[in-house]
Image (tube, rainbow, N blue to C red; front, side):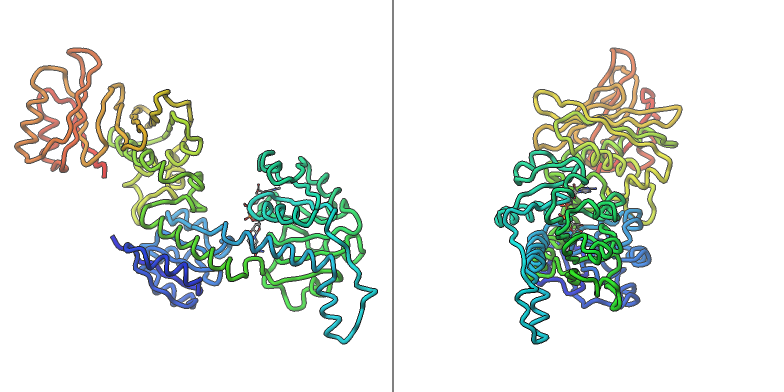
Length: 531
Ligand code: NAD
């Protein structure tokens, strides 16, 4: 299978080369295209990779009939209509790690500039001045840096700050105490306490509803006079008006901003003339190395998503990100097959889908539920295939309630999945197991214990437990030219009802299925396509 990928926005050639080296990908590279031209071309592509210059609008996503993956060589995806992409099952992938060191280094570039008045000195020299007495600075050694957000960039900033002999305090309620310890950062549970300690305040949090305006007038008022403030994270985390007030009134000594509430910053924006404020035009990731590594990271994610279905870098595949994808693969496949099987046994209304995972992997249940939903609902979405990106959306849209639970696994190391589907007056329970890195097996259909591989076409027959049934089923299938790969017969008690799970090499025609279900002992016959 060949996938076509459109590369745009002049992303680094190393990324493009990586895509071109994959035999499954056919790559076209174009400069940033006008929206109308891109709209015309997008229909032929399975994936697109670009930077922020190309807007991935709702219209473009809708027009991209084949589109499955959008790659962004960078972090922010403000240029992508994420909601529409999720709805259409298009994975949006970014490259969160590639910028880290560049941003951390710029933090020290601007911090040293503020501490030693480098920028002011440089412009005064250009004016012909020799301002030695006015431009005295401070040392970083021994000063306290408060780092807000101890993620990738915050962590790299901490490592470098220690090299300068700084004391470190931090606030990030979402990372472990161990990470603080490893980075040598004293942990505070309250932002206010960290602010009160700071000689330098540096922000490395994402822009969320919680961090929007996180540093406003009240927070700036807590800072000691003489504090330096850095924002290289996202515009809007510091209230810009409040920052200008604090600088004008010398409440704080200086600040550096690389990011702004509105970008590009207007030519006449009051920030530009604010005293002691060092501005850079969103340069955090603007290094040769960062551009190369984000391109390579985004292109690798796009290649893996298209070629192997690995969505671990997808921003919009809720709960899938960051998992050991390869190790989950057998489980995901099994969950999908159980979804198909359950749905075949429970056609009609579907109200609830519940997945129970027994095993050690904490990250597993959520993606497994998505995979089960994909299996259960794979024939309800008309235009595009349902996938792990839009499975939850498709279920919610149809009023299907979903849930998952995790329990401890078996001692011998197997991992089990049980799927229950409820349709109001009827319900069904199916289960399966994976041992080690082998393919999964279906181990339960309703109350019956079975053991069959979820491959090819699976027939599920309910029959009366009387002699000769297996022979008659075999003969009928043989006459129809259908080869049996595996036949598993299960019963609850002798002479009662039995269940046969029969794996066959080719699908039955509706006529053969009909004849099968009309054999005298057979109560019900269904077939489900497993791949
Ligand atoms: P990350 O996800 O690795 O780290 C973010 C950290 O913030 C996490 O540890 C998280 O727990 C923490 N956090 C989230 N909400 C918080 C809250 N309310 N209070 C305290 N901590 C909170 O992200 P990263 O890669 O380190 O990026 C950090 C920021 O830098 C992001 O805003 C990113 O967009 C920005 N960035 C800017 C540039 C640039 O060019 N200037 C480039 C890359 C990244």
